[in-house]
Image 1 (spheres, rainbow, N blue to C red):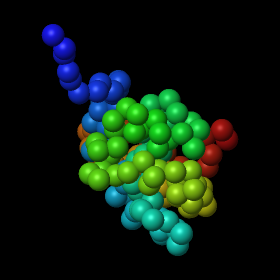
Image 2: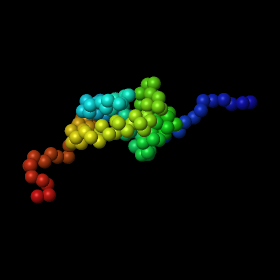
Image 3: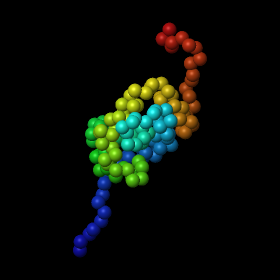
Length: 135
């Protein structure tokens, strides 16, 4: 008797990471703060989602991100209808360049405030003095 079934893919911890990543609305924050790159096919936020998930998943090579996420079956979880070709290095590179050229402080501040609000984390403290802590 032959047994047939669907092909299994090692999803691992991808859905768990997405469950923590999605409420932060990183894509919306990045799209709001960063102007889209003129050569880009998609938004900077969706590229940021893919880059963040791939880095948390263990892949740092830009040219492997689309392949690794597709092999794990995570593309439909990122965005419905997302194709592996949309996550090629030639498309992710301009998104990463846009993020690298952006002023880091407003991006990090917005993401940190979003994380504090979403996960109801009380801030440890806020320095009111304008002199550096080292002084």
